[in-house]
Image (cartoon, rainbow, N blue to C red; front, side, top):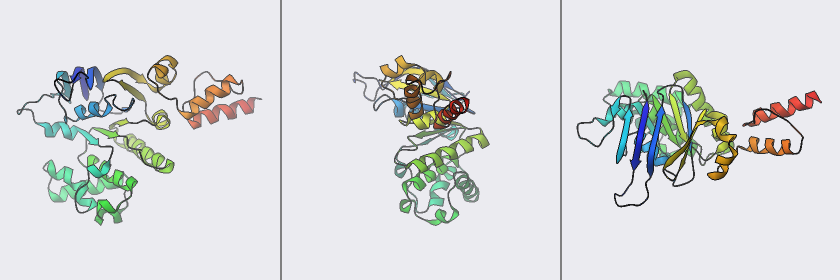
Length: 284
């Protein structure tokens, strides 16, 4: 078992009328999941993933992370939980604080009891995994670009070797090339390590191309949990929760309405749409 929620409720203030999480139940496998959590600002996405890393504790319901029941109790050791589930925040500058990039990546392993030599070995391995140039390791993390700093934050999470890696808006602020490079890096990493990856994202093009499963949050409720194909073919649900189609899917619908192309399965990516267009052209 990876992460399991059963009827989880949470409010930041006891007397608040609005729940940030409202009767949420879900299950996430420890390997080979690639999940996107989507929903508008204030829907509960970030609150949800902070419960997955035991940064927040449910007011009611049950959360189990790798067979450990997560409760606000001094007897519960949180370090093992956080070793299983790594979390990278939306703004990487909030996660980096050491003098050099290498020291920053080493912090996690050292915090979990690794020797300095082993922490350094794990940090270098993690930096290579995310594609950080070796010459950057001796620099201050605050001299790096946004994309480089994000890689440092991801490497810091990977250095503790979590089973599940969660990233809050990993592509925000990156240019189109940077977005693709980061997502391809995550995909290659998963193919190599089989870790489960969870991303929070507003970018439906990224969601459609890279993830397999989507969770939709709305007003603290988990209103959809299923395949990306099921979500993007559900026009009523997309309209109800004001969710956008990926660009390729939107264009495909427009082209089909104009009788310029036809398809049985809605294309979700540029590559899938190109295949349909070229296929139709070849058949003419």
